[in-house]
Amino acid sequence: MKTTEEITSKNNIEGLNLDGIEMLDMSDKDFEANLLLALNTVGGCTDYRNDRERPYDGQEHTCLGARGKQLVEGLTMRDISDCIVKGFLLGAGKYSCISSIEEWDKNWTYKGDDQFGDGIFEPSSEMLERLKKNEFVADKVKVGIWRYMDVYDIEDDFDPLAVKDCIMCEIEKMMGIFPNVPKIKEV
Image 1 (tube, rainbow, N blue to C red):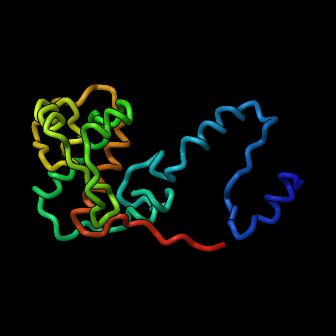
Image 2 (cartoon, rainbow, N blue to C red):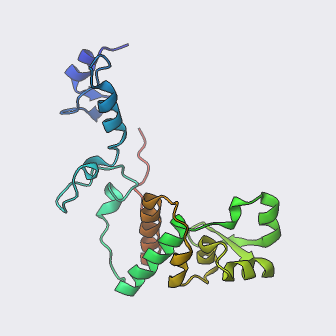
Image 3 (cartoon, one colour):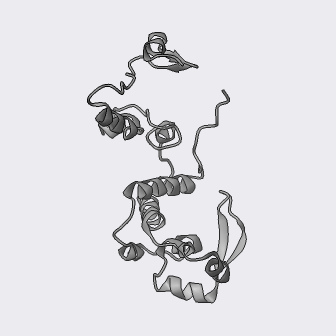
């Protein structure tokens, strides 16, 4: 096993440039705090700054990395508003699939996949009535019967970053570029 000194003296691990990256020292009295900082800063510099000049140094498949360099083109403000509402409903709304698989099979019929590989499901008449009563607001997006006012039926307990990710995906879909992720690099 290599020592920290051997790793940092080379400043290169199998093609990864480590210049300026400190190795954590477990004997350091601040190790736990430093480890928590490292684990919580996977978004790159966005974790500690939010100016427009910051680099896109987050994980490549996120809007904080290479995916985030994409300019939004060809959309109106209403299109973006639609994407925001749909993203909120998908990221924070309640899905009917949280019940049992038997309940799902009883209420939904698989009809194939859309151009993005997402499954297309048709609700039963009973499920359609439940959707109209806003019992499962996230499913309304899949069926195409969502409305702006549905966001008021979202429960308080949700992940705001999941909402952000859903909004970005909806914008990419509307632009016709989803999924806008870098190709996998062979090593």
